[in-house]
Amino acid sequence: MNEQELEKRLGLLRTEHRDLDAAIAALVEAGASDQLQIARLKKRKLRLKDQIAVIEDTLLPDIIA
Image (cartoon, rainbow, N blue to C red; front, side, top):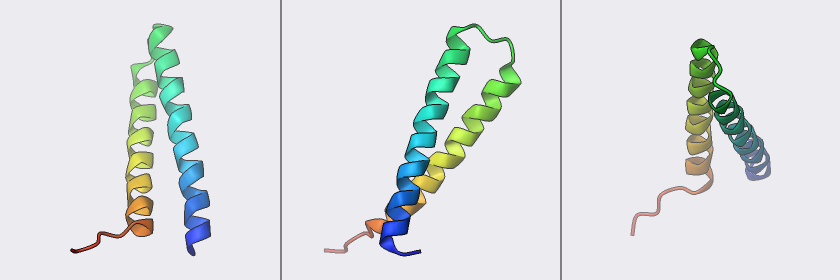
């Protein structure tokens, strides 16, 4: 993937991460009794966070000074 494609993918992942955060908060506030669903959403959110970190590391490599 080139840099432009990575940035586009990064934007999509960040949006999905925010959406999941909002969905989890709504379920918790509503007193949802389906803890399994909440746990699955949290796990998915963590996977997205990991994917975001990988792409960010690719786009902004460490510079050894």
